[in-house]
Length: 139
Image 1 (cartoon, rainbow, N blue to C red):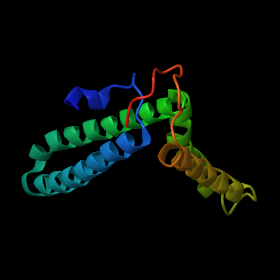
Image 2: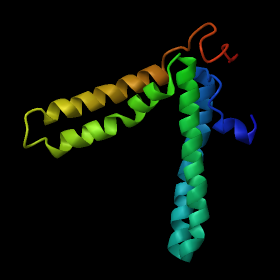
Image 3: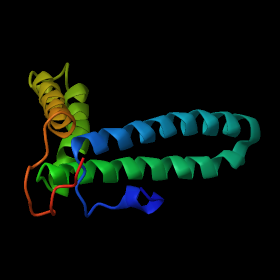
Image 4: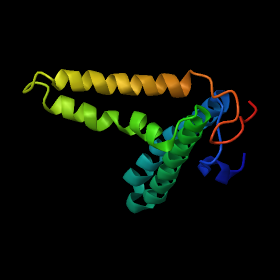
């Protein structure tokens, strides 16, 4: 896989390729986070390019998730809903948890939405045949 292939969202990613790429990107994020933290503590502004590379790594993980959603025959909006949607819902639930009786319901809704996204993206098989995003990629 070439470096620019990490940013391609026009393909499909089968489950095992998705997890292999995610493991690499998570490891790289952890290393970059600690290295940039220590460089910024020691040298100040010299750690900012590492933060930029960390942002590009997060973007590559986002593109990998979109490819996985395409393998499940889901669109980008569905992927963004299940990955980013629980944050404002959960924040609203936590903000009003004590003041309103439905704050707990918002927190449970956010947790259920995120859990379903994790199950569908990480555990379920991809669409077995040709879908609107192309032919299945061999594993």
